[in-house]
Image (cartoon, rainbow, N blue to C red; front, side, top):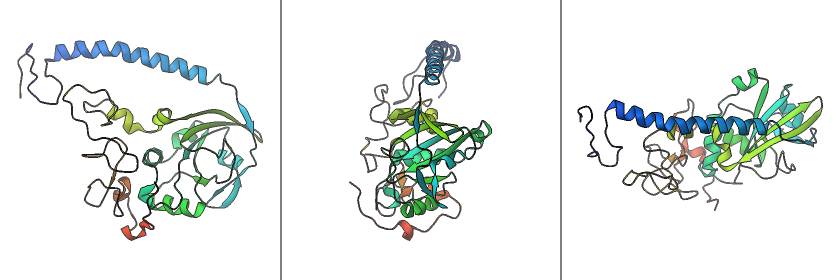
Length: 271
């Protein structure tokens, strides 16, 4: 469909109205004022975050990784700063039964080379037993370091689903920041890109124009109704959204050397 300059058309059902470039540019620049204010406020909040006090904790607390128990201090890898993602865990659940949001967040953090270059280490912590965690990490093909913090007190262990930042001064370790929920989103670049698209994330809570398609309603632990919304992407080999025994988190289907379906293991429901 084409339009002549100055003409508008709303005939594309469920899509933004069609306008000429000058009209679009004016609307874009109006929104840019709000975006810049949002950026500046984010900078101010980050500045306040750097001024938060900190809490000392026991750096000798042991976490379990591929080499067995190690002190939490080792996760710094000799660097002064450490960022961890605390991954939720459902004991005994099949691979496709682990938390959708945590699965997606961990996938987006394939490695930490840029953080490392800045003097920051990164690790994933989870409350699951190490034997289950190790199988899941191998199944998904995660490349970042994972550790079990089962039985470890907060803030290293405890409640999962958080991003936490730590600072080291010699052998002393301090918690400087923690966030959860929507605060975890900076790790997930796909969400930021989806926010720029005309159809958005496809979440039921989003404010969309009337008539704009919504991918589906989110139901925790299940595919959304009518499709997969946002990070709730589990599918079978044909790409059909499902939570069932043949499903996987979608990145695992295309990972080189992906393991066969039969390794999914127990199919118990975690709810």
